Image 1: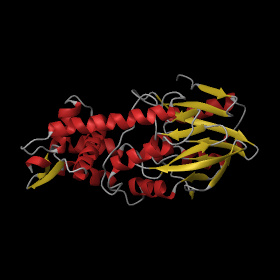
Image 2: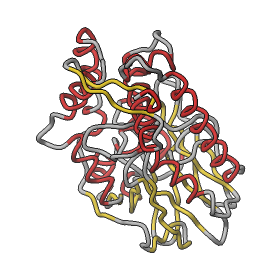
Image 3: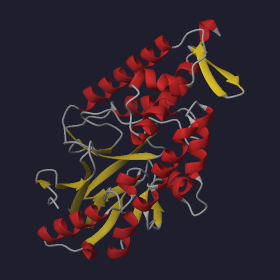
Image 4: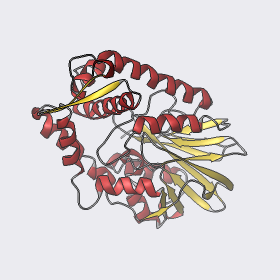
Length: 330
């Protein structure tokens, strides 16, 4: 196994830990923030064998053990950020902190009653997913469960709460779109932002329309970008890739990216009804893996939802499911 990389940012008092993930992401960033109040871990990563080995190695190199960890902060419920929280809580005894909305989403996706995979496969079928892809998609979705077990006991924190970490007072900023109830951590005196997946320096965070989740995720995400772009940020610590300084410019770039994608989807619409699946392949190509298809189709639906809200697209219901046309040809 390749040993995990970690970097200490002395002035900011933050240690970046790269927890191994599969290609193309390669790693997810976890952060360790020590202070008089104890050691806080932000987003420990997915519960995989290699992630566990990464943590054991890093803690050993830092001359700490899991028992030294006093708090675990989760920016959002996705497995690559939330998944190892229960494992780390069992070994440290530390509370796991996340927003009430994010906890609700985690329970909805991976609660004891289960069924999230069936809801999502059924939802995709109404939007054109071929039946032959049902089982591969279901197996792919079921694979997420193992990366979030055991699930932690959660203490809820929310926007407006005071949060001491690394001997500094941080603000909690809630946004949606990429994940409901996503919390970023902002330290106004130093201009540090730990932003999870709300803003990434090189890639565009996925924005998905999912059954039972945010009703209008792209609008929520874009509103969140405008909100975050108002903060004076000197250094941003994202969930993926490297820390960066061009935070405000990046929020503008991401807003422009989604406006361009909305324009592209609008141009794909015409008089003839097309399913979201057909529009997804027209936008992203037909060589997608099942993993890529899940996110591409969900993102297609998020953009179609926004086009309908703007009066540029309309749904057409048929016996086989839902299709879309340009509103002017409705």
